Amino acid sequence: MTAVLEVRNGVVAYGDRPVLRGVDLTVNSGEVVAILGANGSGKSTLIRAALGLLPLSRGEIRLFGTPLRRFRHWSRLGYVPQRLGAGGGVPATVREVVASGRLSRRGLRPASARDKAAVTEAIASVGLAEKERDAVSTLSGGQQQRTLIARALASEPDLLILDEPTAGVDAGSQEAFAKALEKFVEKGGSVALVAHELGPLAPLVSRAIVIYDGVVAHDGPVPEPAGHHADPAHDHVHPHPPHTPPSLWERP
Image (cartoon, rainbow, N blue to C red):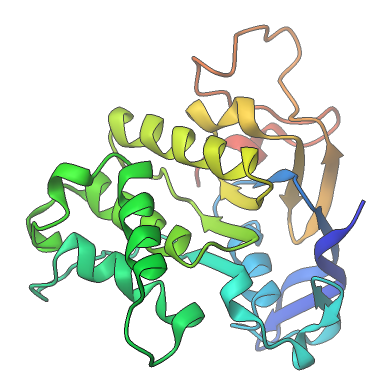
């Protein structure tokens, strides 16, 4: 399989405090990889480092086989950061915000018919077609988060990176996220997904990485607690792998 994202022996520290201590992560083409762990475990730090937003103290990162320092094809990546309000006080419409995600592909040239169609498709994919002319600041938190995901999808990326996309949003928006990601993966896209709870995204996950205390505690199928047989598509599962401290799945 072709790797679209690789982190090898990744080390990140804030001052004297280590956050990641030799982490390895691989996302292959067509995979949906969930990065799981409790708050403060280092999972969001791992994603930000993989994108070059945080420097590694040691280790190597490759995007689509190219070392991060030489990577230039940023339109191949779509990124939704953690709990970022899409609108704030700026009176931008849903369509304007989503269209800004197309800039990484079209640059400064005028929007073409293909650019406009990609924006329309991205908005529809998250169920906001009827809201595209509304100011983002008037939307619910879940709808704002959907807008951010549509913005990431508008560039037609090959790899979508999501940091806690369903945290604190309504059930309807979570279902909309799941449907949009399902369509994205069906078209050949790859996903790296940071989460504390998977909820309706669980059926899409092909592999799970569990981060505990700055190291990889599990790399494989989505783990479940012993004796838990609920359908993860309809239950917010808090799994933890064997021999991993149960506090891994508890919010501090």
